[in-house]
Image 1 (cartoon, one colour):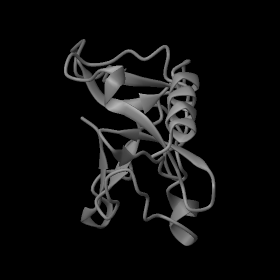
Image 2 (cartoon, rainbow, N blue to C red):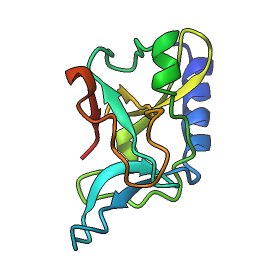
Image 3 (cartoon, rainbow, N blue to C red):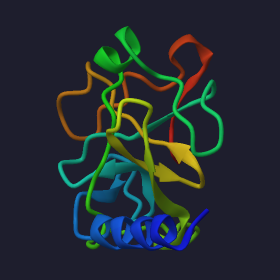
Image 4 (tube, rainbow, N blue to C red):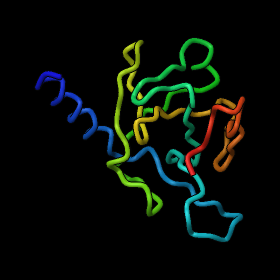
Length: 131
């Protein structure tokens, strides 16, 4: 990787950390521990088993049901076992940016419309919330 590309990746990652994702606290559990990773609106974030490290394999019709998450993460409220260094940014084949968690691209599920919904968890055995 050349120095310009590396500096560009660093700059992009730095811009990423500014406030769109959070760990959502499950209000029904009575616990202060985060139950899953979500954006600043409480919408769950998912990973896809068919992705490769830092490579998304969700395109075309897949993207319609599983919109890409790309967010500014500076105001994260993270569980103890999650840190900002676990997040990164990739450039998708179509040129769009996407946030990753531990090299796994992150997505929304189109049927999650309210905070704390996790309707996509376990879909087809390959979509998972981040607990």
